[in-house]
View (spheres, rainbow, N blue to C red):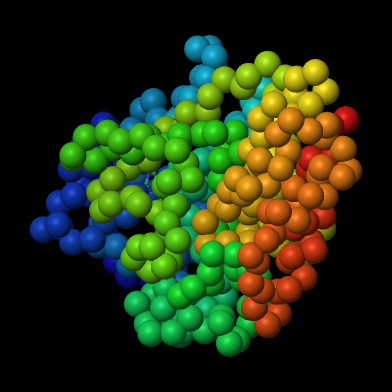
Length: 327
Ligand SMILES: Cc1cc2nc3c(=O)[nH]c(=O)nc-3n(C[C@H](O)[C@H](O)[C@H](O)COP(=O)(O)OP(=O)(O)OC[C@H]3O[C@@H](n4cnc5c(N)ncnc54)[C@H](O)[C@@H]3O)c2cc1C
């Protein structure tokens, strides 16, 4: 691991000042360290300065008293999965948090770090592979080992976004709040993520240097809302998703009044499927409607040489998620 300086700010402004001070070299924010420290040990990231966010009081608030759910960036995944209000009203989020890795990782890992974690593509994670994602000239997964890579939205890189919380939060209509020296900005979570073809291919988000995720705000669910997160893993024990679905529907008089669906682990960003949502509106949530929505969700998928299995798998997960909400 490259030597670095650890700084312990006690306010957000101080953290932003530290991270924006270019004279001190490059900086990275440290939350639970579950991804950042691995990246540093494997020489994928080598900041001159590590800005510890855990020394800032108040960044770990979890509050639903005002109707909407406000989650500070440092809130741990284990706290989210256990919170009674989250389980009752934002069920997809509780289920997604519970599905992440192991209890140890959920106890240290934070929501901010989970949403900002880097891809798991083997080539990206292999120090010796100078792939496109790390400033090289080629995405090796395209003609190489691509079983775990993207079937939607790929090119010129084919990573998938690994976060379980992101698709659940997009399905729940969450917004993310960012703060930097230029002030605060707030956006729907799906706008936080950027496709490789639409931005800097070495990044996955709009986060600028020195900019911090401060909180996630999830709206109060409308009456009749049900939500779920369905994840398929290769191993019974902890694992990243091969495919996943965050789903939220509002049921009124036995029919779908509104729906939000977001696919995970199949695209470089959490992949919201608005066309599939439209299929559901005004319908009884039965097997026919679920199948049609699943087909629509995967329309346009372009599998690579080893991941065509993700198409029927993801269709099945969409159907399962929707039918679970119908019961
Ligand atoms: C063995 C293993 C299995 C895993 N399995 C899963 C899984 O199944 N599903 C899943 O979703 N995840 C999984 N993860 C990922 C894990 O959930 C994340 O690594 C963890 O949530 C990251 O949170 P952290 O607080 O430790 O972030 P850190 O490691 O501290 O930070 C991660 C990144 O986010 C940046 N960052 C952190 N907080 C902020 C902030 N507030 N503002 C701006 N930037 C920030 C850091 O600079 C860094 O780049 C797994 C990880 C491991 C090690």
